Amino acid sequence: MYLGRQRGMLRLVKTRPIAIGIFETTPALRLIGGRQRSSGRVVFPLPTDDQRFERVELPHRGNLWSYTMQRVAPKSPPYKGGEGFEPFAVGYVELPGACIVESRLTQVRFEELRVGMPMELTTLLLHTEADGTAVVIYAFQPAPTAQL
Amino acid sequence: MSDVFIIGAGIHPFGRTEGRTGLDQGAFAVRAALADANLRWSDIQVAYGGSDASGKADTLVNQLGLTGLPFVNVLNGCATGGSALFGAQSAIKSGEFEISVAMGFDKHPRGAFDPRPADWGLPDWYGEAGMMVTTQFFAMKLRRYMDLYAITSISLARVAEKAFQNGAAAPHAWRRSPVDIDTIMNSAMINDPLTKYMFCSPAEGGVALVLASAKKARELGRASIRIRAVSMRSRPQGSFEVFAPAIDIERGISPTVLASRSAFETAGIGPKDIDVAQLQDTESGAEIMHMAENGFCADGDQESWLAKGQTRVDGVLPINTDGGCLACGEPVGASGLRQVYENVVQLRGSGGARQVPRKIRTAYSHVYGAPGVSAVVILAC
Image 1 (cartoon, rainbow over the protein chains, first blue to last red):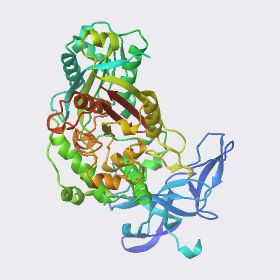
Image 2: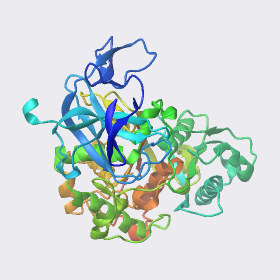
Image 3: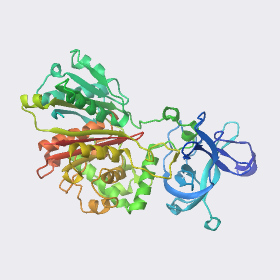
Image 4: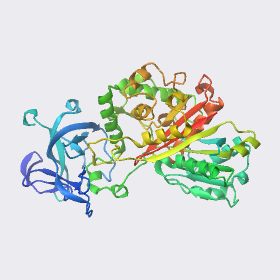
């Protein structure tokens, strides 16, 4: 359960991850990737039904590799961002020793984004379903440099 | 290895033509190419053609004539035209045929290209999260490149300004009006750093080329434009392509680099020997990055090249002399062949107001598209 804000009130809302098996929140927030057994190459997401890959947790901190701002609403379907589109940032974050992951970016103004800036894993409320369930996806936000 | 010549070229104007199907635009282009070659459809021994989303090319025999010729449909995304040319050329090089046609067409509705995750082997959440957007990919490849090689936004605007200027002089182009730098830079931001005028749009159009063996071309008195190389490559490990939830830290080269190197090797010449080039310009930054990926300049040199106007029609290496995808739009199946058509026009010296003003002997074209394919064609006269 997350604490979410709805209609200006702080209340408990039902949440679910956007998909099973791409990130976990306990014991800690982590992205789930796949390591190719033969080569050690790390991919994201973990391919399903593919014995060549074993499950691996990806580093939760990294550096911004590139970024852009989505200024117009992506086509829906497939986009499910809910009503009232607000421009959002997306980027690729290089996770050391693993791979470069594409992600929504959050808690940052576009003007602050720089290639190479430290980022850390978090989550983002993507949209709320008809029954009030909040759909959550992984995202990256600026990381305090001191923690790296 | 026997030489193959382009002896006819035809185009249906790009843009939007209400009431004319994609197939009809393809047929129009074939008829124009036949007229240009002074041949009839019954002279064509084999044809290769396709569209990405506008019908089956081989049904064109209903319109062009039921001659019984072999007609191979090509469905190869953005490389459809390049692949058709590759097939039509190979058929002649094999010695089995003397005259062939390569053609491509498309008619995309406004705002086309609605990718579905499952069609690309991707999970649904990737699309739901708003990351399955082609323009994002172009913007992020470009942002990284600009950061690494000190390319600034004015260069992006210069590419677009040149495209619309050249398009204004090309009868087959869609956008026929010049647009000034300020308008380009101040137009709506779509995906930073790219504004509306820096992106090409889905469009309509058709192109056809008639190819002949050296013997046949000489018989017909049309042995002037020779195909020096046709090369097509898919992506190698470590290339950065559209719709990638993750990429490898160890970066590799692009399919464009592979196709370009192969084409230059086949042609036995290098980038410095090229007189005019048509490079994939899905957006302004793509033209800039493709200048380096195709070997025409070092990474980062584009900033000064563009500032000095070196890629304008009267520059040292004119690029996208008909305005490229930015001015012509992108009917996927026809786009790569449009570049070859434009090179034929330039080599013949019949480009009118957009003609490269000095004597040219070699012309290069490069098409690139999802999911990481490139085709390069080198012509010489």
